[in-house]
Image (cartoon, rainbow over all chains, first blue to last red; front, side, top):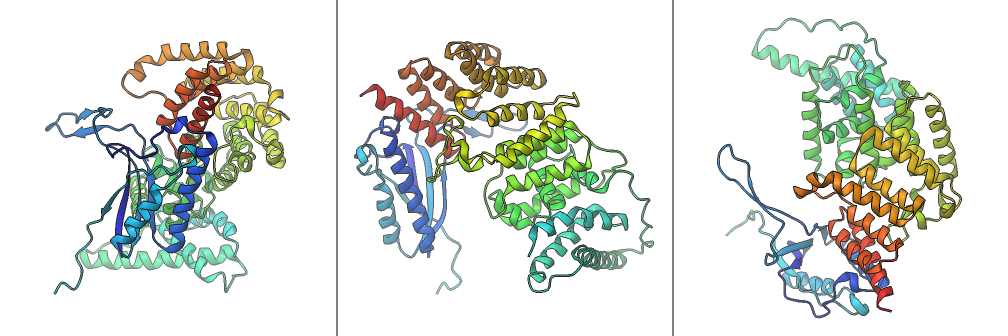
Length: 135
Length: 391
């Protein structure tokens, strides 16, 4: 088994095919989208492949150390050009192919007009602990 | 097995160990181990005297641990025998426990965890699952909390207000897991209200009951939020409402108003209205005025603006909101805008007929929403208005 992060962006990913801001959808289209996401997570729990899903607020702050005795430097909210993560799902699957297959399904979540969003999701393998047998 | 019985026995078993001379941290560990053993053993062999069983097992666990500890210390240095137990405490034991677990030296998250374990009788695993953290993290949080209060001497009653704040947090910020934290908060507050004669304890209990009564109506089958105005009032729990109102009346009659009683009074006025149109908004505004006087919290002023909008029309509500902005500008200048401010403004603009502004503000509010359910709800509101405008 290997863990993968399916990463969703507010900004920074290529534009999806069905690119309409959510507040321009019909309310029932939003409900259908939410249900699709819930059903997807529930199905992966059922197959034993779900690990975690979280959504992030769009507002964040960059912070860095600024030397002994000084308060940290903050830079925020993010400038328009910066990459902005919206949330993620962590899955534990048997193969990279399976991770890609699931990301494809997640990207097909319905959007405006009830049509799939074709949203770009980033699939990133976790770095794992070293295996016991190495030779 | 009756897990509720097990939990309700926890504080008194802990108190008995304390009276026999065990210090709080060691006694609490021993009771937790006895609880875990009860969860393991009782389903097959339920004891005839559950409390006696718990005391015996917890005391044995305590002695085992103390002997191991003494042996360890003996190996390191020669020590005198354990001192004799001190005199029995003057204040009621359970109440003492509440004060200790909500001690002002504890952070809110530590106080919540310690209260749920020592007073509530929940296991570390249950608390960890409820707050979505690893069990080891929660175990560490609890043992640090116990170290923090280790030196606290409780020879006089603590501050009831600190206990009430902890219980309010358990009720209001409970998450998930197999334990119903809202019900647990109600049980602990009920127990507290019996142990201490304080109108605010009654006020908090009434507030919890009145909100708990609406729980089934608060979410749709698909998990989305149903706002108060759209809730099916037939699904409100009439028994809980009647109990909450009764407790609140008795508390108010004592004429020592506090913020929980005032909040409960607002909840009671909503609960009393057979339909949303029959809501007594004028009285609700008056209670918000009391709350502003008692707390002067920006959140209260924000909610008051909504009530003013209902009582005197959306323009009056927007004026109340504008006054609030002026008074809190210095705080929001530092990048901490009040949560839900945009949502309230959106609602009032919609009522005022300015759909374009309302839709824009709902979308803005969705971006600032503190949780997913609220974000989805606010996005849907924006979408609803945009669909109407473009029709």
